[in-house]
Length: 296
Image (cartoon, rainbow, N blue to C red; front, top):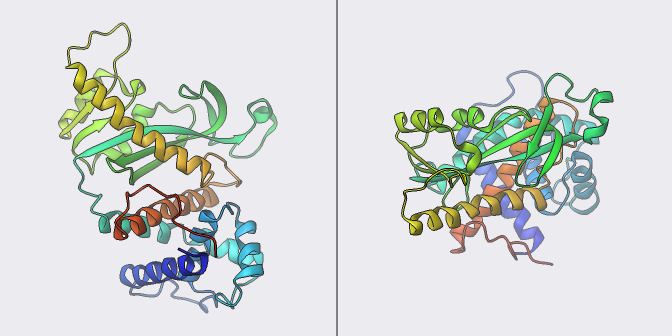
């Protein structure tokens, strides 16, 4: 759809959901901002889709090109502050859209992690950014050592993100997974990094059947056809992480504190799932994003 139609569609969706989820005003004191919260979140989501991943870039783009749709855009600093303060609203919107896509009760899930760089690893000792929160880590899929955080993503079989948690890069991904497992059941597909007898046993207690490829020194008694199926289906989460990385730059930090980090990740996941929702109601595959937005 054309960009202006996309903006209008996203705004109507977000505004309806904000009114549904927050019938009581979010601010009980002071004057509400002239730019409504629905407008601010719309600017963030659309900005992400159009390749503007920094708060200042989003503000500049809408100020220059869409002032007639958003006449009350405030100063840059006011917009950045308002957007960051809406991190909880964006998370609630994300959960509601997952429910609208009936992805909250899926019986097949995929789990994986990805690096989020804070600074170049060689500069980490001198950096003060996230000094007490970030850590050194290693990404096996990219054969990459890095300094920063690790994003842990849970998606259902269609590729719709349904869970996310953020840890320092040196936290074991199996330990981080516990934050996302309490609300799911059924089949869970992970990579070799999730192999641990205690973790598999804990999954079984939660009604989760954890399946992963085995290491070369481990005997696999499962049917080869099942193992091939596991590997093929598991590639879906690699596709989703690729989209979040290439289309929304989720692996780049672009901020200096946890408050802004939480808000930025929330809007990227929200943008991804709004795209999936629009695809589904249009009868398209959930994560087939090509041509979702057309040139005017």
